[in-house]
Length: 223
Image 1 (cartoon, rainbow, N blue to C red):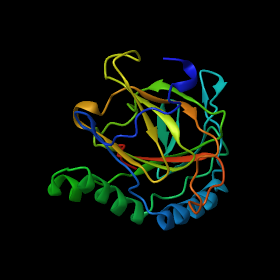
Image 2: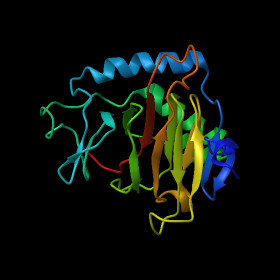
Image 3: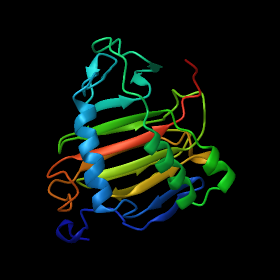
Image 4: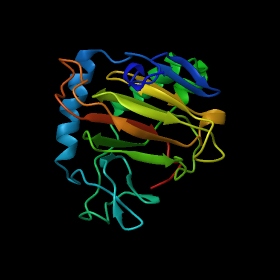
């Protein structure tokens, strides 16, 4: 097909993407998105300010602020020893409740949803130039599901397999308000962000440009 007529965006279909991975479109209302953006702005001011983590000496294009535990490649600590030594903000109770609702919405057993207790969140901000290479979320001891929420500009999200960074993978368009949960056989699937689509944030979401992504995880750590 002529490139002029090739869709820029990947598929918008939701539902089960792979065994253990489910996408629900527009799960957060605009009011909820706008409220969370307000929380993000407070988190980004500190006590540990938002920053670009360094991986093998290179700064990531994504900027991150952490809740509960501080992530730095490739470990979790309570204090941000790679930033300013301050202790990160506690993990909020409302986010635990939201995570449990997310598991219910994606078809998890009620007992599993009720016992889900994430204790850290990586809150990433993407400007239009930011990308995230294919990687696994494997620094956690626990293999409880990861709950991912998107607010702001849409992105092309590549969700792959647990064996390698290559094919097979599925490219999805994650838009503002979308929920993506992956656990079970999909928990260690490689995934990344290949493109942020400028000027796609819906009016009223709280962001005029850029994308916020919240990923809730259960570290399995004590202390």
